[in-house]
Length: 441
Image (cartoon, rainbow, N blue to C red; front, side):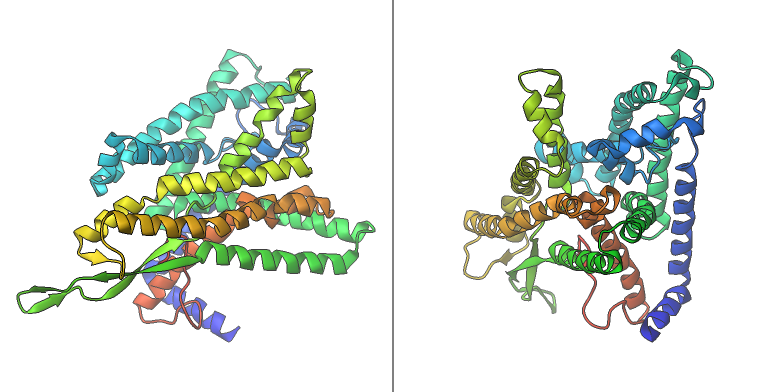
């Protein structure tokens, strides 16, 4: 405890770091306040049907968690930051597959600004689809008296503009955190939305344990211990790397020697991050569209059971498959080999060029297998938690996208704080070693 207090004192001794932390907290407060501001023209007291629908729907419940409850509150921030994330994923894939975007990626800072601009444009296009869809869902779930100013053309137009403006403002808040705050702004906003649901979920679970015959305090303590172990294993997955040694040739320039040192390429066990789970979850909702047909209604019923065997078995297989495919897209061994060759580097015992690319590809394929299996286990853990009697809201914190985002963002933010401390010659956040985020070496 004394070490922790001393570290906190050191953090607030650094003026720049103190200002960044306060600025970040201020932006987060603005975002949370906006999450409770209901859209104009809707009676906040008539949102019970919408909240009940969200709790019973996997995809909508996930969006509600990411938005910190703004989705079920019919807030001006109801769509949250997810349209921007969807656009970012598309632009990222285009940067791998399309030469025009590949060229922008190689242009440095100017190319990054251009890609950010393309991402904003695509975000607006995504919102032009999602905002009207959200309003249609409101018309379906809410009674007519909930629309105090009518539910006609004027409401739909104003509602679409408000939802688009809300998401773009949220995106702007995230960018401000990245520029003047601490951590990655967009990731922090998602994490704050997830954490905002934790007190309600924890209180609901605690109340259920002590008001029902479900184990009481002992069962709750066991749950907390299991959750701690899952968090520890997830941190190990996020930080785990396979270090590939690289030797750089010596170069004499004037009276100085450059190179000659051995370095390492950190190849991550889980290079795909949370994306395989997101893609797999999106595909798992496709069979539900066949519920309207008599011949396929049985299949739709099977996949509507989120705790069932076949749902989670197929879900796990999809996570493994998407982990391999997404890793193959984002990690390019041939490009890594060419970069090493251009800078005079080589892997000891491996010929430069194609042999090096094949060697890196083999290593990546081998370490991705255990990483993908562990990721699939994390993805289906909430279903096991629900089966064991944990309430649906709290079960989301036992795995899935919520857990991975929480761990990854917290590690990234702590890594930035530690870098400020070490730069000013203070002790880091840990007695030994370094905190490694998702981009840690």
